[in-house]
Length: 235
Image (spheres, helix red, strand yellow):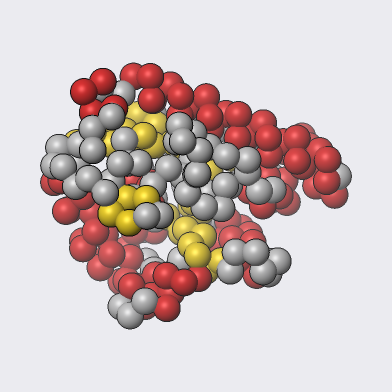
């Protein structure tokens, strides 16, 4: 069966449709996109998608990829965004999950578990924030992604992007040069089902998290090394 870019998940939330119409067309027109291996995103059922985080543009890039794969993404997003007029309403209406970083609140993980159990596609950034590494590669990850995968026996689908770092960093918007290539690639699934019983073993979970970040780093380096040289340092 072929993929339907406007499947049942995509019509479930009116606010998701609003966000898709408002955010994706300008991004599609402004940047030159390249998507690789979208077929690795599960067509249906639970999908736990773990991404690197090099720029504040990444959620648009990752959402674009997931939508092209025929799914409706649900993001774990920092709670400050939900306080912004209209933006916050759109995020809440589209079913996105607020996260209060550093609070120790497990509510976001519980909501992500429910979403996965309901067969949805959940997008997470294991680093928890945009990378501060000068080379733009992933930092150490937090354990929540692996814990979700172990608890629900759901494979982790790694997804990475490259080319967005110059566009929008913590310091604010950067280069909006039109035509900048933004590449997104999906890696092979990471199945941790056999390690389900290790969920209470902190050291084992940390090791699996480190392994996940190594996969994301290797995929990111692959994109970086193939990225057009004339754009690599362009600002």
